[in-house]
Image (tube, rainbow, N blue to C red):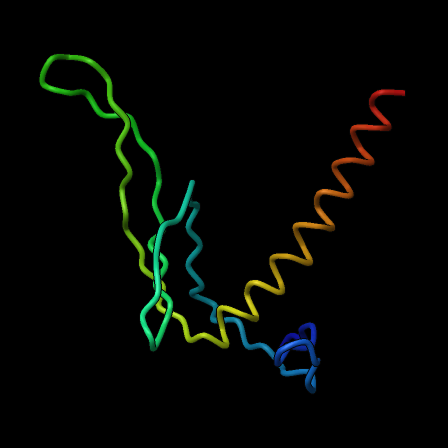
Amino acid sequence: MIPIAKPLIGDEEIEEVPLIVNHELKQIYVTGAIGGHTAHDFRLLFFNEITKEKNDNSIGLVRSIDYEVIMSHRAVRELYSWLEKHIKKYDEQMKELKNEEGE
C-alpha cells in the first residue's frame, strides 16, 4: 500500500487514507474533455483529437470519445481542489524555468 496526501472534505483535510494500486492499472492520454452534470452526478467525457480524411480528400479534425467518468459532487470538488493546487504549482515552476532561461 502507498500512503497518499490527505483527502479533503470541503477545505478540511481528513485522516490519511492508504492507496492500493492495481497491478493492471490502465493509463490513457487525452487531449481534452467535455461534460456536464445532473442533480446527482458529474459526467466527464474524455477525447482525443485526430485527423481524418474526408470524402473530398481534405483533412478534418474529429474528436474520438472513448471514456466517460461519472463522479459524485464530493469527488468532483476534491478533484477540483487537487487540480487547482497542482496547476498553481506547475505554473510557478514553469514561470521560474522561463525566467531562468531568459537570463
